[in-house]
Amino acid sequence: MNQTGPLAERLQAVADRIQRAALAAGRPPPRLLAVGKTRDAEELRALCALRRAAGEDRPACGENYVQEAARKIPGAGPGIEWHLIGHLQSNKARQAAGLFDWVQTVDRPSLVAALARHRDRARPLEVLIQVNVDDEASKHGCRPGDVPALAEAIAAQPALRLRGLMAIPAPHPDPERRRPAFARMKALFDALAAQAPGIDTLSMGMSDDLEQAIAEGATLVRVGTALFGARPPRPAPG
Ligand SMILES: *Cc1c(COP(=O)(O)O)cnc(C)c1O
Image 1 (spheres, rainbow, N blue to C red):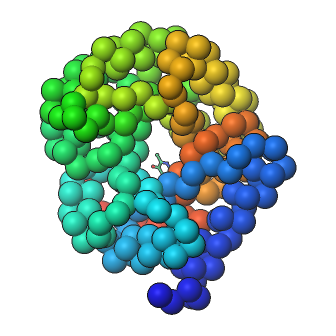
Image 2: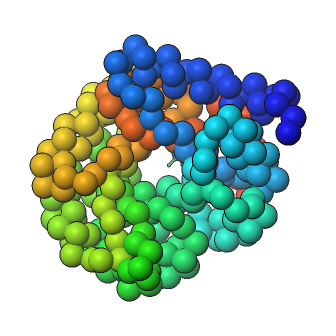
């Protein structure tokens, strides 16, 4: 495996940032989720090979769109843990339940039911509740006050396993300004842990704010641009 080149360098730089931020925060380093939107299967395969060579057993990759993931997953090769990180329409729940290991964007009871219906309880789907933590304009994610009821609905489904929370704070040019939202998510996570002691995942932080997210307690960061470079403009979603 070629361990040099721009992809290897960017991966190393991201790994270093994560390590440094965790050390500074006195927390265990979070998991890395490589966000593959607009990237092809070959790039994902190459990145995962580098991550395996660096000692990661089953690298985690995230996709925003079910259709795009369906096209890419076969070509990216085996041994990858696939996460859905984009909004999920209920009419795509069946396909998502078949393709992904994790769905990070569960935000309403109807979606809980739809995912559970299409998943084999012998192999439960790992789920995160997406919280609309501060972005009033976003239609996605539940309100913070809805988390306990949604967690209860998930717990009632043997085909689903609640692992924690996910958030995409409102964009702000200064990542420091996203810190209060990350802190609110950590408080919500700790409150939920009292109700659902098995949870272990707080998914927050992206290329430009992973330090702030880790400082506030992220256990999984979702990184695209810092790994793959700037995204080309997106064609019509398919
Ligand atoms: C695109 C995306 C990311 C990664 O964003 P970058 O800034 O490219 O690191 C993380 N989470 C979600 C939900 C995304 O859509």
